[in-house]
Length: 299
Ligand SMILES: NC(=O)c1ccc[n+]([C@@H]2O[C@H](COP(=O)([O-])OP(=O)(O)OC[C@H]3O[C@@H](n4cnc5c(N)ncnc54)[C@H](OP(=O)(O)O)[C@@H]3O)[C@@H](O)[C@H]2O)c1
Image (cartoon, rainbow, N blue to C red; front, side, top):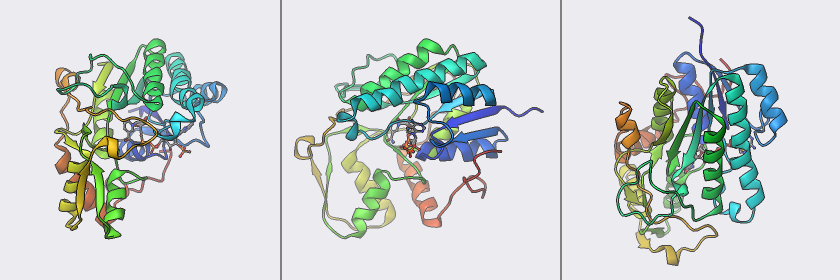
């Protein structure tokens, strides 16, 4: 049987690395492209690389992800997250490829009081969120086979993230203050990658909210990390006003998973169960799927 050819952008990132490993393990022909192989903010490069590979599927997981820095680099954030997504979508359409655009809960303003449906009105409160929303707009404008996968509070085994930062700080033995008035859904990259692979096997295009189930505040998430890791930490909840950062964060961005349920896709396990697996794998120094290292960029 001919293998389906899949391009993964941002293949050196947290999610990109897991996607490449999972797709290889699932038997796809995988072209995991890091920035040095494809800078997607260049339309010429996008056209050349995608034209040459002629993929069946593109998973656009790469992005400008520096949420605070984006407030000072507005043009760059929009060029990479907005225009870059548009270049990818135009090239995907030309190739006849399915396209997954990975987006964010930061497209919402945080004023919701119940889990947010895919159809809810967007209204980003920071530059990063606005630039990712522009990427969604361009993706849906240019691609007739697009999945927009919004996700939240992502952590994985490759790269820096909240869980790893908390573990590092805890090991320094100092008391910690963590924001207790922002609520969301943590998401393990392995579970997210699995859901994306399920989506690309279908032709149920559209917008999806994809996160682990359940919800928590950052403070509750930190407390769970320490409890599961068996670390005793002096942990205090603070308000967003006491922990001011350049970019405003939405206060509430808990997802409902209606589109997954309606499409017959499995809703992901609870965030706490995913966290337990992450910590177990982190302790074992796990790197890939089924014992394979994730450093093979091509099948
Ligand atoms: N992390 C989260 O909490 C979170 C939450 C919601 C949504 N998301 C979305 O989920 C996706 C994956 O996030 P992640 O945490 O895996 O991100 P990540 O670890 O920061 O990886 C992003 C990757 O994109 C690459 N990249 C940036 N600009 C590029 C360009 N112009 N050309 C080629 N590659 C470029 C980066 O390469 P360099 O290392 O060379 O810069 C990096 O490898 C992103 O779309 C992000 O917006 C993330």
